[in-house]
Image (cartoon, rainbow over all chains, first blue to last red; front, side, top):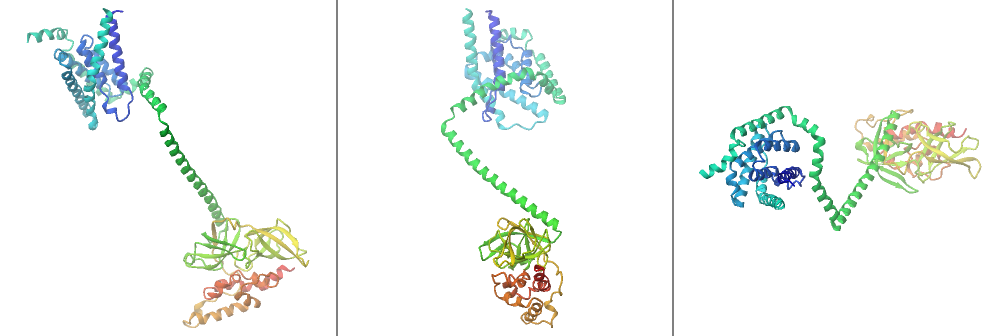
Length: 163
Length: 377
């Protein structure tokens, strides 16, 4: 199998899984703790294979997320584009952080994402969200190492398979 | 520094993430949001995309569904037992409520029937509830929850939806007692609907039987004939159903026929009854007014006069049965007993002569004149 092709399939597969996780119904209690899966996946690919993730793709992914989740169209697109931009800009540093620092960085990124979302809400006149609005970045930070390790493992396996 | 520059150069050299592009994308995002916020395009997009997107939701919901299925499958026995128990209790409670609802619906029907009677009568009536009932061979009384304060007076007729039940015999401030038509001391002037024959129905002491003795042998009476109140005696207005003849037999002496009738009113079942407002005196002299005498005589002084005035007008023999309990034999003293919607309940009338006049006065005029001859053509 072509290496690029395999990696591309993994990329697509990860995006689909992220979309499904984002949509998966959860008990009400756990709902605020759902990590922003789309954001996490995007951060991962932007760190590891920046040539796959440009601002345009991030934007498109955001549009897909908007359509699936029924938010305001363009909401996630804008946020993911901003996210991708920041990650690409600081990619060289983020890549070589130890895992805990990387996690903190992801937390900061997701928090920034939340702030952007809050700004959009403010512009549309929505009321202030409850405190549980801020739980998701923490959950994302905790989920990050596992996402990172899992996909690193998958990619290295692909590479070994190749070799 | 140089290291950093070499690191960034392949990235930004292509302009993949130049600030300009970011600004363009941000602007595009904002434009999209504004457009969607104004025009709600997303709803339309989702409508078109529903076919494609719906399976995605299905797939996304699969883990949750699976989790629910698993939880259901391994829900332990105790929880199920408890739930079963709880549901059983709920079912019982609901059943009880339902039954009560049935009872209420039934009551509603009965009240409606009563209401219909009230409308069809065109008479002043008053609704009362049964609060006690005495049905033994010697006393057939019911107690109602309306009394003097509600305007009840002795002698008022008591009806239910199907016929005459009895009349008020005693009035207390908030309750009153009525004698049923089946009380052995009660007699009711009736007329047979089919033939117009006037006669008298006596209480038998059993709540499903009225005795109609003293029917001439030649009279046309047969089972199935309906009895109505004749209006004689003044206590009951004419034309109310009283009962239906069940059987006719000859008296042992052979001189009269004796009929047995079944009361039309549901004497043992009615829970709500109608009290007929006292009728205007059909005939006879106007009632004596207690205050018509000399200025402020003590009521006790007036009562002998009042009763004396009333009694002579009544049949002479009536005076003695009115003070003693009416005899159980039905043959010889029928005139006083027919006159007696008031006299059948002698105790209250005798005890309170001053309040009694409206009740005691109607009987005098009719019975001696009318009833006994009427029964013997």
